[in-house]
Image (cartoon, rainbow, N blue to C red; front, side, top):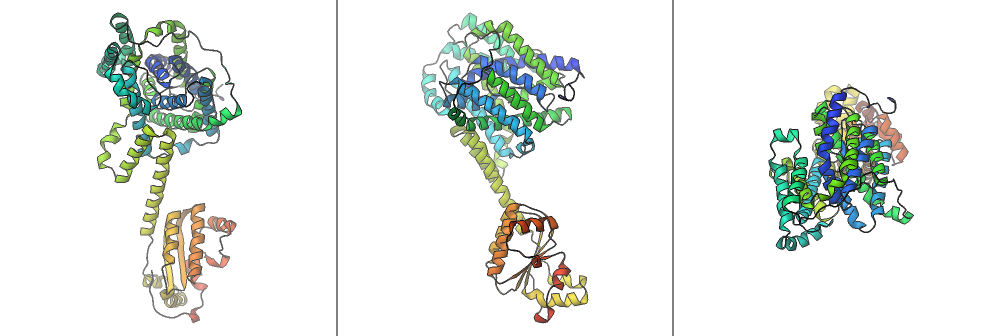
Length: 545
């Protein structure tokens, strides 16, 4: 058992039990609310908390992490429901396929790449998701039906708030007030979302009976069912499933990193992706919505003493017990109470730390964050993340290229003479006026190499181009193609090309690419390059670019 699940052990069992119980109490109202917000009903949120919570804890690589439905995943799930409004089997199939993609990503060891998403992109996405949750819940708070589509909600909001259900508005605002203003000492005893759920439901039964209610919940898990859809339907689900899987990976690994900081530990990112994949796969089979590692529930678990997967699995069992024992009582919970709870969730998801600093950020970073917010609200969540990541990568590549070009050292030719033997010093003194010598260092980017090729097309009066690459630490395939452009530009200008000090590994890679360089173009050192020259054919004094 320990070989299969190395994180599963009995240390700190007391803390794990307390953490599991506390987290289940915190999770109950949130899971109900996220299920309703997804468009698939409160039961779908509970099923996800049970199945995903159990299998992600058992098979994942972040021991203290608690998984289940959360705000960002619910927003994406709602967009899938909006795409297939009358076909719930398609929505659950998307969750199953997302789980498969997550597991494959873990087996392919892609976990380390998720951390490369730039922070302004993550910040913009989270802020956009928070705004979506707030806007969607404003419709529910008014006592009217909400939509999964943000544009439709925005269109109907004025009409809804001109004719609100005041009983729903009242009980929703009471729930929101409880979540916001419950003192910390009391919240440590009974979590404010649960307090809002219990008091809000009780007050609604006594004073606000006309507030719409969520209806009856089942008292047990359903029978697992494979979606009976066609191959063409599965093909339609690839992009929605990739969107769910990508966000689940980002959210889970970010939460795992937060847990690492609290526990001074280190999670296994690839194993965590596998665990999240298995959990989402099982949730989809049982009719649950997609989910991921949940930051708030994970921090609650750790603070309560949870340290191992036992706490996450216990949290799932308690949720199952709640479903079996109290499911019939949940039908009286008003939608507006859940909306009040989610309004606070949406507010907390917004990255206020980054928002407060936006006026002091470099213009590009601020614009990138705002662009991702805009795309998250009005386009597609995956488009927002992909577009932001691509733009950030292009900006980084440009910055690297500009930095490398600015740091290409131009060495005084005379300074090299004292270090050379007399015969080579004489050779250098003769050829330096007609030699372009660039000294490159660090990783060579495609942008820097490409701009160097463009520079060579504008020079004249030289016979040689020497690239001193002894300080170059890394060259990727794109940069090797740019070196081919440099060689072509040198040939067009009639320059004899010499590449000095390039590592043998990269010389072999360049040879495999067949980019037109000969062995004679390469020299192990500066003195070797000088030794290859014909001194009697050279003349004049020293000048160096």
